[in-house]
Image (cartoon, rainbow, N blue to C red; front, side):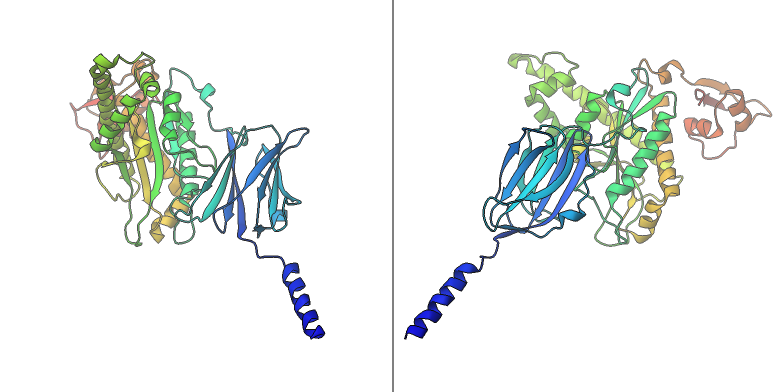
Length: 437
């Protein structure tokens, strides 16, 4: 009997000595620095339970996050911070047995924004920590808002997705976000080499910008055109080809209604003018409607120009601009378009989209289409407006190459300006000669 009691007592002690299994796990830690913040994402096995506090008495400053009943399944020794704000991420003695304490060492004192996100698409439960502050060296080829010049046409270039949002993924594992960023950078370089134009990159590196914030960033720099670049995908590998999308009438009506309710944004759209009082709200609606109609019409015209250039260098999935309800195409302040450069889900097009040569061709086609649009529709006060095309009547013995040399332009520019499909011209034909390149 005594022996039995001893055995039972020992078993009880063993049961209490064995730590209980953690209720949750940290499976991965990811970091996405951007120009104005660093995002740190904890991939969790289940919905996170957490608390946090600051230690700001000395540098480096620390943000401490406690995860009770949580095990760390990620090797922090392999984590290398690429953020100017976050110096390192390490563990410390947990608050309670069975928990995990994570310490983020920071270069500056910041007030974090922390939110728990549920499962979505490729991700499970996450804890997202946003730390405001300069976190990324600026790409020297990307112009900042303060670098932009007033008399140049400004094109806002939006590379789709980014950061924790990879976009579509090709059969070989190619991320849409990487391909479109390379095309966007190439396009920006071409535009910035044009004396009449300048490019503003909505994102210049691998980080995420909220969909609704993208057109707002373009509005804040008074962009003349917004171009969002993407790579399409489908559930089967057969579809292929490029296409261009512009805002649908239904989405435009919805956005106009939201805009009329947002007095701060409405004032921006009305060029800083105070919106009319309640009894005269029809004036606000009329002005916004006119602005939206102009942006949509101009967007369709610009998309048509770019589409014509894309046809020369790649297969088209759609031969005319398509209308869609897309968040990035909701600005009333400028024409907008979304360019699908091809189907990354098609093995052949994935291979093309990975090619630097094809990326350069796509960027060149978009640039030429954009330039052609502004040559026909020059914004007031810009070089395009002050150097409108001259007219020339073709005489015997003249060719496009002779005219290009005479007017200090190029054969391609003359053909684009006049929508010529060949280099053959006729005596007596009237040509518009674009301004010098």
